[in-house]
Amino acid sequence: MQQCLWPANRRASSRGFTLLELVVTLGVAAVLASVAVPGFVGFVQNNRATANTNEIVTALNLGRSEATLRGAPVLVCSSSDGVSCSGEGDWSDGWVVLAPNDEVVRTWPARSAPGVLAGDVDQVQFQPRGSVAAGTTLRVRVPDCIGDQGRDVRVNVAGRVSVTRVDCG
Image (cartoon, rainbow, N blue to C red; front, side, top):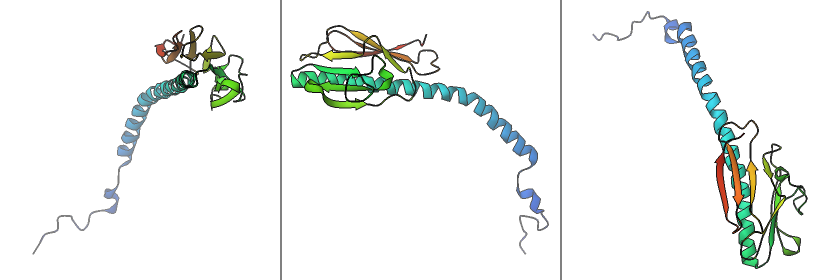
């Protein structure tokens, strides 16, 4: 005769969780969430700054490459309409790469948040050898920027693009 491992009169209510176990589990989850959420917000802001920086660097490198390929000056400029240099210095409205005869090489749309991209010029003109007349700096700042989440995109007179991580202040 075999003996049953579980008693037959075991109550059905003992198969679930007790109220105390659920409260403790929810308390631990709340503590973990309160620690993780601030770090996640910083992570998201840092990724936005990186994405915006990569977009403008891509445009500048494309402009330089097109200038040397075509043997003619190429403009990278702020643009609110995507077909002409009409952004008036606000790079957050979008930008465009223009070849000779106003041929649009590529456009980038406006950024989702205002004030993300700003510069001391509203256009960068690459010469046929890839150089520019004067170096410039574009500033990338996401809203509610904290710490070193800012980026400075510099174009030197040789036309080379570099990125520096900077304090948001």
